[in-house]
Amino acid sequence: MNAKLSYKQGDLTAQAVDAIVNAANTSLLGGGGVDGAIHRKGGRAILDDCLKIVARQGGCKVGEAVITTAGNLPAKHVIHTVGPVWSGGQKSEPNLLRNAYYNSLKLAVENGLKTVAFPNISTGIYRFPKKIAAKIAIQTTNEFLDSEEGQSLEKVIFICFDEENLLIYREAFNDCLPTQQSLF
Ligand code: AR6
Image 1 (cartoon, helix red, strand yellow):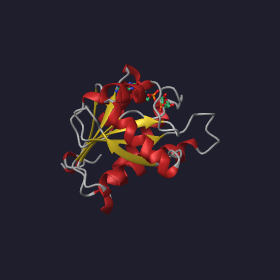
Image 2: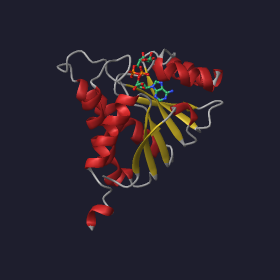
Image 3: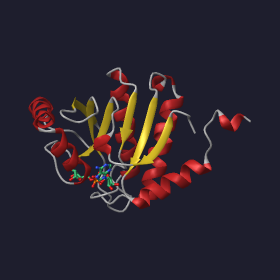
Image 4: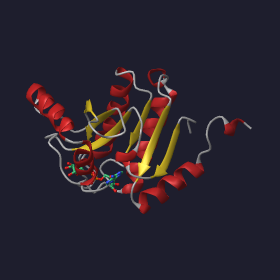
């Protein structure tokens, strides 16, 4: 496991990082879950930026990502990505979830950001099985941090909100020591 990668239980909207990632929907106009919390606490400025993006490109496709201000939140930016709705696993859901993590990280790097916090995308209202989602999230992010294009990132953290995700991430991280420690 890359040493820049970590997890903790908490509220994504309270994280003072360069970017928090929103589990948005294709309309970019807000919704429930973590999306609702981000817009509620971040204020109107986030929606105004989203509306500009909608006018320009008509929303955000599943697996893609866009960036806005974070308004009143302690983070500097919000990266909005759209995870897939789980409908059995035969509709490219794993690939689309991978794309959501990858494109969010890529956008962070393109904007010169160093610290990023993710929620457990698609595992709430979109019903993606939490264990599979965690495996995809950790693997995609770990590979990105190890790759050439991820070198400028300093910290990526998964914010687990519900107890079930926290336990899943704890187990996954306990199984894989940070790469620096595993040398000994
Ligand atoms: N901080 C961190 N994680 C949170 C928070 C929070 N404040 N609140 C919820 N979660 P969900 P999805 C966790 O439903 O499944 C919206 O209506 C939650 O426990 O927010 O990708 C959008 O507009 C879960 O583990 O997102 C879309 O329509 C994780 O965030 C749709 O929901 C994701 O749950 C997206 O569904």
